[in-house]
Length: 384
Image 1 (cartoon, rainbow, N blue to C red):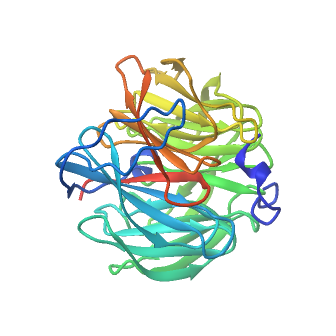
Image 2: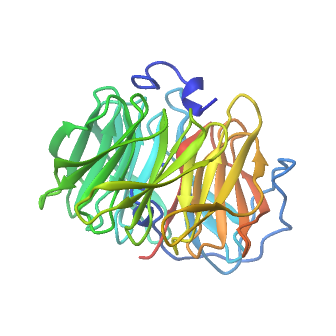
């Protein structure tokens, strides 16, 4: 069972995470103090008290979707050198909050709030703190991404099956540039190539992955790809070098990999089992590893499944699967040595150390700071 099966019809879209990998995980250094307390493992779901990480860290955000209006929030954590988390603060967000997209330079953040029918706009402070500056209406937004040049925000609108392109102004405000057909019935996630030339969209209804060329003004133009995938697609990811694209599919419990041609076309290079309810996924900063969050929601038998990405885009299992109750949101830390996973039903976020062979060792489990951290709930702030 995947996350969408627990949601209301309006939240599921028609059947109801990064942007590109290089975009979805974005970041800023901040100064914090002191030393973390002893780590708590994730296997028994013990929840650690708020930790205070070592001297210099980064910022991690968790969007807590909370289907009831007024309860959704974004919780900000500081990340220490040892990978542990310390909760800093929270800000309100529209209910049904999903992914967060951050502009290059880490000045502004945008969150898709599906049940509130809006994109929430935030200014990012020097310490990673968020200040809301605007709310932009758009119908049932889900997948969200910024262009590599930071000039355009892309938002998938599930119920109409459309893709909105917004021009990002110098002050972070959004101006509607175009609304086009997504080429799918119920789009869920999207990814933009690192060069900004192509955008790819996964669909929850028709088991399709579609791609479009992007014009000079940031607006998607002609279609360049149409590929069959498993039913009910989840996260769509592109490797940092722009060579390969991966999409996880909940209903078929596997992951599809494609080579991206110079003209934007897709050639399938792999299909691998990825766990029941596979929905979230993350590619390491060096492009060598990929992990899938297979939530299997309602069963309590979720897991994190790891792969090594080969030179030809093929996937080889890496490390032993790690059992978790309800993993969905997942993201790598800035240096690839830690992986962060949010659990939907447990309302937690767990830090894992990533071993050389791909094995994951739990470092700490923290409350997520809210209710139901869902699809693409974990986002990092990198390089300012």
